[in-house]
Amino acid sequence: MDAILKTEHLNLWYGDNHALKDVNLEMPEHQVTALIGPSGCGKSTFLKTLDRMNDLIPGVRIEGQVIYRDRNIFDPQVDVTWLRRHVGMVFQKPNPFPMSIYDNIAYGPRTHGIRGKKELDQIVEKSLRGAAIWDEVKDRLKKSALSLSGGQQQRICIARALAVEPDVLLMDEATSALDPISTSKIEDLIADLKKSYTIVIVTHNMQQATRVSDRCAFFLHGELVESGETEQIFSVPKDKRTEDYITGRFG
Image (cartoon, rainbow, N blue to C red; front, side, top):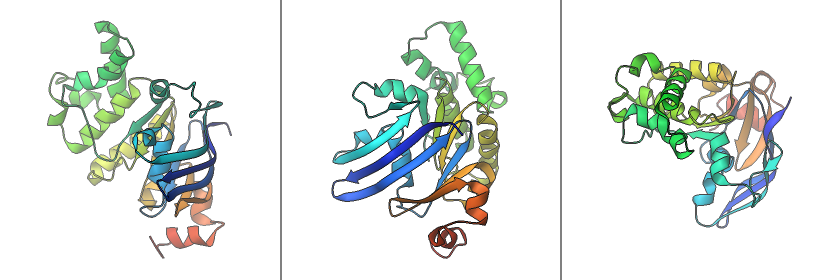
């Protein structure tokens, strides 16, 4: 099991609040790792630490390491733009830019210096196909991405993340704002994407975790209680707190 991404003794404080406590977790390549746990347990904070999104929050202090391909992402030599090109993020609410579908997808490649129309056309098509939305939008690429439904907007955001060819895709409750049909489409998409990408998702939905993930990590009060193969976590959890959570006794 090769971990493309792992944390070692990761601690994070928001001011005096110790939000992540000594988290050690490996996220293997070409697998889906689901972060589960009740609201406020640290799973979204943990996810955002993986591409340094928490750097933007005042009063944040981080200790420990996040290792991406043998490099500590907090090393002063690591350029955040480089990191976010390799580790993409899809947020809870769809957040397409207020521009055309085409320009949404071409935005990242353009910022990385790709200007040729032919190359951009190929990237846009490949990314939209990768996000399983090409057939729905190929005839209206010049229309605003904001004119699409919520589920389509979320797939546009996934396509936008794919356009810079990341290694890792982070998804923070990417289906919680969507209807069941759109959710199902994105779950199918996740299963397909893991052939090419390593995926880490935050989900509140236990059924979703069992459907889409290979591995699960259960967080509680900022601690990683246990992690392992999804089937094992849901059938024979090692910790009583994990069992109580997944059987609905709390959370």
